[in-house]
Length: 534
Image 1: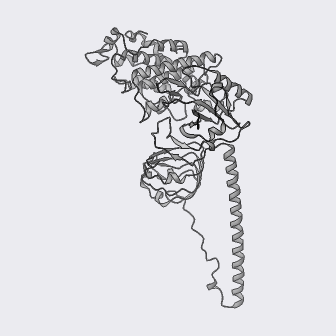
Image 2: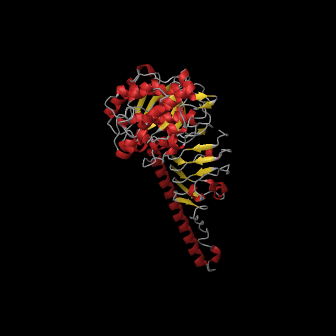
Image 3: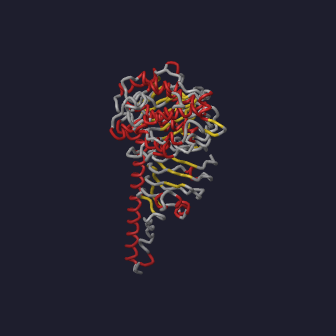
């Protein structure tokens, strides 16, 4: 824990006091807690040489510690004003804020030395002093009782809403764009007794533990986002499972929710992460899945500690993703969005890098407003501009995933955070092909692939067809699966000669100009792929 350098827990609705354990970390460089409900005073931090320090938009109070008020590194934040690190906390005072702290009132309310020398006036002053002391004592006692009452209500409300307990023991691990630092956490703090107070298992072969076993398990936070939080739980004398916590699943009643969970639990496919159990409470839900030993695809594509994925592994992953998605289309033929939230952080990998889709089939039970704001499928052009999801919307997400896999670029870097507007993922797709094609559109980790460039180009073309703005021209799930299944790890001899000659990549058949097209009219460049037989 002493080596931890970065803590990012922004916009997670955490409350309580900032843990003292955070303030004592000697090597902490980045601390971002903005957009929560932390209260109380800011602790004195042992290390003041911060690169990023943001406590804005909480409920902190009292004076800002002098060590932080004079901290020059706070000016290195996105804003040039260091006060933005503390803004949005109405009860905070002191530098660098413009709100000065009130000076303590003087204790010399009655100064006996200034009283008249007469004995009668001296007695009056003594009586007045006694009265004032009694009144002040009563005010202090009343304030203490009121404070205890407020804290008791907050604690009870926190338990009812299953807010996480932030008595954290942090482990150092790289933060990726989609996965926050792994950290141990008291999982029991995230549960409160629900309507039936127990786990509801949906698979007969996955029992062997109950809610209390899960509460006592060793747990780590794997990721946290606007849609929910994800934990890895190691059950004592039991399995390792993934617990996903959701707050916005009130689109259906209890009975419908139970029936939908049973449907998800009945799904069986080599590329779907099985749902094991669920925990129901009106305010929030917990879903328990099997564990993917190798983490998420996003952690390997974008994390510093991720394993380098070569071309054959990436091809294996995208084939598995396509097969899993196709199975969802078959199981939910009447749903426009059988997955609804397909992205790299929702693709888990096992030890052999076989992919497993997770967070699938949740659209019917998720609040529509929340789904529209945060779920991947609602970033597609037809939803962003026309609010009309259709049976090809999940294929658009598959296309984005293909391009992310090939280029190594993180899609959210091309989005206005939480917005669709005119800067959606389809714009990013266009920029990758039209603006960034320099012969190195592919991720550098697969650029050295020999005898596979033609197949990589084929997959790029498939990704572009899946991302077509025109729904009519976009691949459906059957076409996408068929095209992906045709891909091979290595080119045939004829195709290999077309792409590599005398050591120069793409010296024949395909040039940079072959990709200078708009995703809105991809059909115009079909003739440029004659060397890439589909």
